[in-house]
Amino acid sequence: MEQPAWDNNNFGYDTLKSPYARGAIYLNNAYELISGPNQWYLDSAKGKLFYRPADGRSMTTTDVRLPRLESLVRISGSYSEPVQNLAFSNITFAHSTWNFPSGPQGYVDQQSGAHAVGEYPKPADFLTSCQNGCPEFEKTRNEWHQIPAAVQVSAAAHVSFDGNSFEQLGSVGLGLGMDPNAHTSGTGYGASEIDVRGNSFTSSAASAIVVGGVQPGAHHPRDPRMTNHDIRIVDNTISGVSKEYRDNAGILSTYVTRATITHNTLTDLPYDGVDIGWGWGINDPGGNQYYLKAGLYNYQPIYRTPTTFRENYVAYNLIHDTKQAMHDGGSIYTLSASPGTVIERNYVYDSQVTFGALIDQGTRYVVMRDNVFLGSSRWVYINSDAGNPDTFNTKDNLVTGNWWDVGPERNPEGPGYNNQVTGNTQITDDNLPPEARQVITEAGARS
Image (cartoon, rainbow, N blue to C red):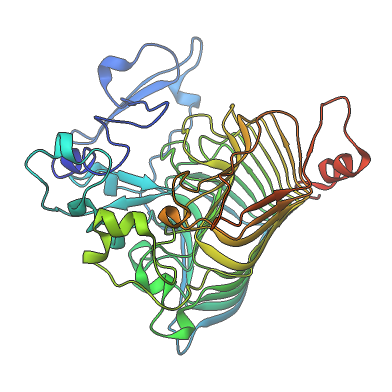
């Protein structure tokens, strides 16, 4: 409840005062809340840890660790001389922390780990006038920070992570080419030809893997060498991450050229499985009309050139048991224009009666085909404004050849939308066609 965290968390969208659907407030780390075995309270000011062990368990045999490092490995060169040709294999990365939220800025989350930092002028009546956006809030958007990672890679090329374990980490597990504020080197972006294969990620406070940034240097880099490109995330197992920062997806890839996310298994997640893109279309050519009215472009230009988000490939992933805490989003989620991007042959089920796939604001030129979605409230939700296709600018997408059982699609139609949802098949669990069974069989991490 310190300032400016308290006011910032009551300002903008999805606030403490006016949460979106299924919103909740979590209280933790109070001595008075200890009510059963294996619960604990840390009194940082006094340097004391209070812990109630299970019956019959002795503290002499209990392993207690208090992480002190915020980053375990930092790989970073410069755009003119990037670090090159490193391989990390069969290593366990464990026991890191992130102390920033314990300060007065707190954790003012916006989405997928992006959080507001700083003090911003607010309307005098912001508790009523700025609960679903306002011009003053839009000033924060291009200045959001990202959660740093335990293992950080920026200004680097030809780096591989193969067969490693990322566990018990206090932040993001692996961060590739994020904004400079998420790198202890002070240099962000510039990650290229990076392979992340056959690793396991579990028991972390935030996302398993984050690729790319959210600030202007990510979507319109001043130097082409800053562009994050050719990132391959393949055959990884991700389970039980984002335990503390529950708005974090299992994998987030923002402004990246040629990100390949295939044959991964993602499960036991509070929010989304795989999220690609960023920006709600506000940084695409012509911008987003909704945010023009909201006042965003008082603080940034309307761009005329495309972003670096293009030619992404999300396929053969097994995504299930997602959306355990956070409602808004999809097991597969897209934002903004991405020419040449294909989402295919993924198997998604058990999304806690939320969206299987959310094609969110500004998404354009994406092809989503031959996926299997079971047990969603909407197997695909295309977030175009029902009254005007230009409001959110979610257009020109093709959704075809998919199989779904319950939860019909949402796709506003009419002149100007051009989101084609065609040739998809409703099925039942006991009537899966061979083609759908093959998608199910092939999805997920391979041993």
